[in-house]
Length: 259
Length: 347
Image (cartoon, rainbow over all chains, first blue to last red; front, side, top):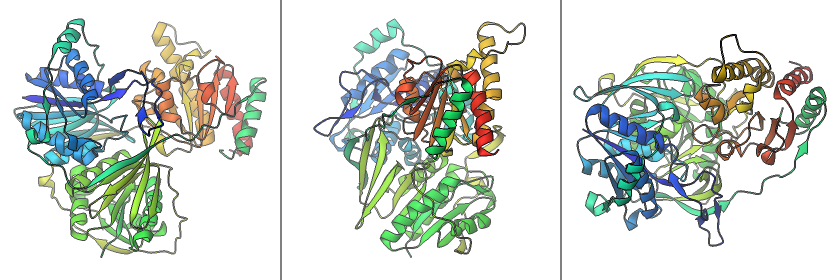
């Protein structure tokens, strides 16, 4: 039994990210971190592999910088790591990502559960997750806030999903792709021994030829990055007693036509 | 005959307002391609919702209220959408970039190996080519995107980014019933139960949001005897959300949001969290109460039109983002605003 978690590196949350003069996205000297949603996916991967008596493998699809997230994952306690990279994946869209991800899952073999964090904050999307499930032909369980039961022998899973309108309990058959929300667990910090072990790990890199796939001939591609339009920096401090503050604020908000 | 399809999302048979915005975006594309705008309505109440879609600009509707489509289940919905796409080769499929819209269109785009522009902020159509603007890097940077290849393009639009067309009740659409692609026995998921959360307004659709943070624990009310320490703080904050924030939200017709600090401390459920690892919102008015404005919070609300910060610490980073700042005790200021708002808005 095998659990696979997908992750990637993203610039640290506090990083100032901007488009530089050559049109590339830059975050200066800011550190790379694991995509914040993936911490929950990695923790869940460790827990599920342990509960099922199997192994947890972490995979990143992307250039060398995503190796950082893999090292962090190994330091947390995932068993194996692999990176998928190929010149053809440069500027890959979600469909190319999903095609490669599904092939990587098949290469690992004996996988019952694939786990993703809710979305990737760098590319600002979650669509590659659902597309990976479709490329695999597996059940997709999104926005999962709790894995209530997994039966690997009977190939069933029961989860709680967090929807806009409330909580839904769903049963499904395995294998499945699951995307997890923040309140599913408390991600652990890497241990000292884990960090030492991870720093020595040699992570294999798989090409598309290694995976035996080629990418679909269509894509949705970024043609240009742009900085945000400058913020309106007007600021007004509203002073006085609470009653005066309230009156002045409502005046302003009515003038702004936002009430 | 080709078309632009717009999936009209419903919940318990009621359409979501973002679907009318998606029809607005779909109209741009349909006019560009010179094809009809077709609403797709699946699940209970489909024919009534299709009539509403016609009023909001749809020329045609494909509907199915089969029992397998009662609850949104990705596999059932995606199989039907993919069947319609492969049979009819529409020019585009559009929906709101809601949690369900994102997964439905992504799944069907994967089934047909079609390009997908997800969560777009704007679309421009020029000749036959379509470009879209999206937010990336936690909203710190924008990207322009174009598509190559494919018969059908898939587009999901961010809530409140596109205008709905003015409804015209006299418009009607040619309605066709379609049959689902899968039967119940072919579906691998089963909805066991659903527990509706009480009194929440959908944050991503809200025009106004009132949010509370760590400062909610400074409630002057005493916690019940025996409740001490962190529990007392949580009690005070929960009481503040219920009896101070909620009344203001009700007076303004607003949704209630929260910072991660407030959620992690157990002051309010996770569903209310705005920011990184929570929801991204862009209301006309965002009122931040007792929120310091950490970068994680900013990630979720920076595109709000007007930001009001209420905090006792005038040095909090939230004031750097705010249009209006009120320094003081939120437990005195908010009730005063609620009272004033009720008076002035006549509610």
